Image (cartoon, rainbow, N blue to C red; front, side):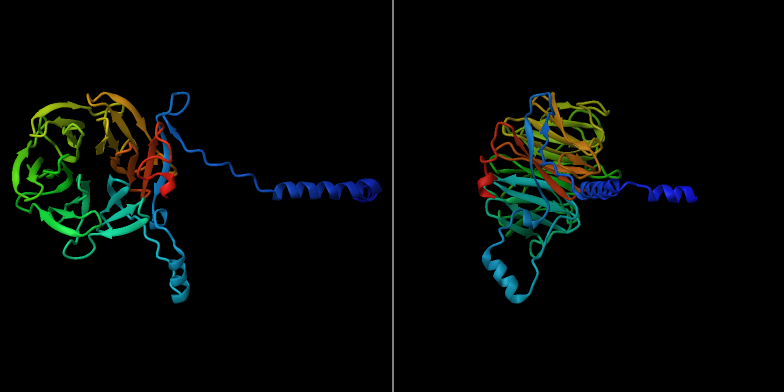
Amino acid sequence: MRREAGARQAIPTKARHVLPAILVLLLTACATAPEEKPFVPPVYPPPPAEPRFVFERTLLYNDDVEEYTRGMRFRQYATGASRKLMGLVKPYDVAVLRGKVYVSDSVQRSVFLFDIPGKRFLEIGAKKPGLLAKPLGMDVSVNGDLYVSDISARRIMVYTADGQFLRAIGNPEQLRRPSDVAVSNDGARLYVLDTGGVDSMSHHVQVYDATTGKLLKTIGRRGAGEGEFNLPIQLTVAPDDRLYVVDSGNFRVQAFDPDGRFLFAFGSVGRLPGQFARPKGIATDPSGNIYVIDTAFGNFQIFNAKGQLLMHIGDRGQSGMPGKYMLPAGIDVDEDGRIYVVDQFFRKIDVFRPISLSAEEGFVAESDK
């Protein structure tokens, strides 16, 4: 022990000056924070394939669209009030027209408008006479009217583009579980999807006059044959007026002409590309391609108008990062080809832009934000 102590005392003077300097350098290196890597938006399909879509943004709160003006700051300072942050709790579906993004929230019993060009955030359906009970599927007509399926009230609620209540269509005698709604391209017909239930035979599409609310016809019945449904969940009208219905219990999508005549079906149960495990949301783009959400896969698949698979976007994941989903539900594609995807678990809407479209183009262009 004495020898060891003596050895420590025998360290040369020069070494005693060098060691503290090395220690300082080591501590400085440890204290230096690593440089943050810039965010690189994911593209789809990923390299080395040629990309077709790129992630553009996520919508979560009113802050994502509202413009915080100088007047708003002054009022907040003068009154001592804090700025109210509003967001999504359990979003279900999304409908988009000319930069106005409508999102239904089944827990908050409202529809929220993210008006990107107008830099506004509005709540729709929280007051009488247009009070909502449990909004699910939605669509926007060519003139901007908003149609919302209320599965608890068993009717369709109609509002102006800014949320003023207009009228209700349907009633509990005609609808058991209306889960989605779609408007024809000319705004004349309203297609209401009745999911029914395990103890019901009301698995069909009810067709109404969109203006008068008169029930015109019924498309389909419960079953597994052509034109029949088992727990259908969402539907959409394509640019060529075809009606596409997600027939979730039969793990397929069925196509009909505007009068309800069966055309074809695609998809089957399975885990392979082009198959479905838990199909849910559906939309079409201006070219007639079909977008189908699969909640189990955590993605959406894109098919052409013949039902042939083109590609998929997204993966199942717990990070909540762009393109990562746990409970994807609704989907829509706007006039410019941008895709809007709802995830219930992460309470978000991811927006994807076609590679051929620049960020400065379209109704939600960067210059308008």
